[in-house]
Image (tube, rainbow, N blue to C red; front, side, top):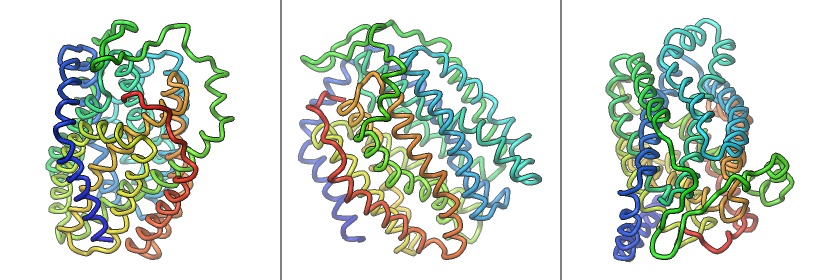
Length: 445
């Protein structure tokens, strides 16, 4: 497995070297449009501030729950399951309403207001309830965390992806700034967390105020068409093309929609449980001093997300070359390698290297997901498909599986749990080779 993983990473490097001239030409054409595009810069502002605010508390959320609040593996599973259950409601609400609004900002404004309240809520409401009345803490915390950030991330991604198609810039290049913001904030978050987690929570609210300000100021010019490259134009959406509720709900009658959902549950749900619920505490367990583990994890996480930001710029090129389906399968392969190697290795340096695989997986999976959606479904329904088809599906998997995985960990430890998760993702990926649809002829993402 180690040799296979190194071989895979080496191949990615070789592909990049062989295609660097083509990529430079591709990137040069795109950048000419983006530099002059005010919608691109506002969109990048949305993403960098949202993901920075999220990172300041979320990147250490599992560690905070376990080391500071003192939750068990089973309780941790309950918290994540409840958060995902609440996220499902908000994703359905966000997805359907945002598809009706198209680029209207009412939902984003609501979300941004809840974001501003995150610091006081975590300190004065959530933490005391989890310590003194766990069930009430879970029930009250889940909708607030979901409305602001957990569902909000999918809302912002789908909102900016639609703007990118309407106003002539690459979503991957804008999403780069989201990863950059997350990485920069994670670097700071690791230092602050070792001093006092409450500082992280207050900082998240401060950055959320900047996000709110950008949202108020940004006023996109409606449905203009800008050139992308030489002959292509941005997708133009008009008021008459706004989908009806019947068209939105017709998605649930499509077989390929449910096959897509099963793929997401069998891969991304299990990977999310591994990456968010288990890995942070697994990694810090290698350090004698908890404070050292928290700091090093923050630095590593920050470096990983900086790499992820770079891959956000490069990934669209490879996705256009490989196609969405193959890109999703490659991303799943990276998941399998990372989970299985975590179970196998006991060297902190190698485990740190394996964590960096996440920088390849996330750009490939997220950007290929949008390309797959636009290539195989009605592009007008992209928000519903992304929030419901992708995010609801993955959260449904987390709801059902988090408690069981938490119990499995309490009874067997990390290694067995990781092997089980990797096995499920592997089986799902093999099935997906035959069940995922080949997208229509590429329109460049």
